[in-house]
Each structure stands twice: as structure tokens, then as C-alpha cells.
Figure 1 (cartoon, rainbow, N blue to C red):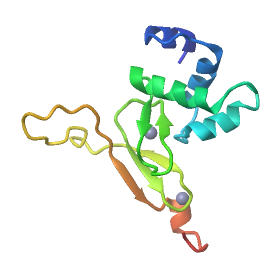
Figure 2 (figure 1 turned 180 degrees about the vertical axis):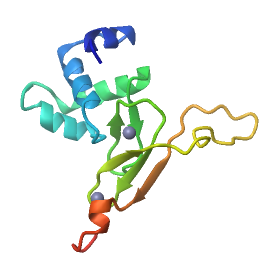
Figure 3 (figure 1 turned 90 degrees about the horizontal axis):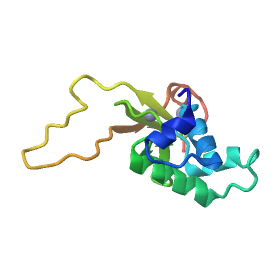
Figure 4 (figure 1 turned 45 degrees about the vertical axis):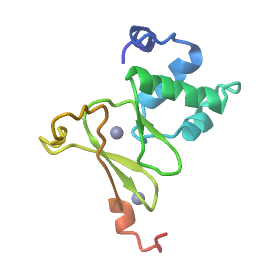
Length: 139
Ligand SMILES: [Zn+2]
Ligand SMILES: [Zn+2]
């Protein structure tokens, strides 16, 4: 993303400073953070940033199609700025969310006629390699 301000403006989002910082954060991480996680990191350099602003900004990004909200974690929404088709794997031990490529053809669910697909998300859960080989007791 060479010009985040122009990128936001192109999507009809006024590029305020907090929005730019949130976009940069989200585009620069593979962690699929929650609003809480983003707020915790950004508030260090932006003390006036409220959790509500972070959450509202993420919802706005999702609404205009520059981020997606993942329903992979039952306790909190996680966000991803990578809009290319890919699936997600959540480790139930460490809580990290990993990307994985989709098998060709799986992006298009075989829906019967009449259904209008608006959102498809492939979410899996299990143990990541580090947790699967760990000797610590699992929750
Ligand atoms: Zn793990
Ligand atoms: Zn992802």
C-alpha cells in the first residue's frame, strides 16, 4: 500500500489520522487482531485513541470492503486486511489465527439456485504445529 490516505479516499473513507494508523496496523500484521489488540498497541503512541474508535473504524473498513471481519473466535471479532480468498485456522490452545490457501474450487460453494451469496468464510479450528507438539497440558 504505497499511499494509505489515497487508498482510504478511493473507498470513500475520510483519511483521518487514527484511521490511517489502524489501516497501517492491520495491513502490516498477519495476526488477525481484534479491536482490543489493535487498541492495546496503538494507544501507546496515540493516547487519545478510544476502543470505540478502533472498533467503529474496523466496522467501517469491513463495510466498504477494505477489511473483513472474521467470526472465527466466539469471544471477539478478529479483523483481516487481506481480501484475497483464503481460509483461516484458529489454534484452540494459543488463540492465534493462521491463513491457509484454499483448494481450487472451494471458493465457490455449490449453492442451490435462488441463493444469493454475500459472504463465505472457511474457518477451521485445531492445534497449530507449535501447540500440537508442546508437552504442556492443553485447555
Ligand atoms: Zn497454537
Ligand atoms: Zn487471513
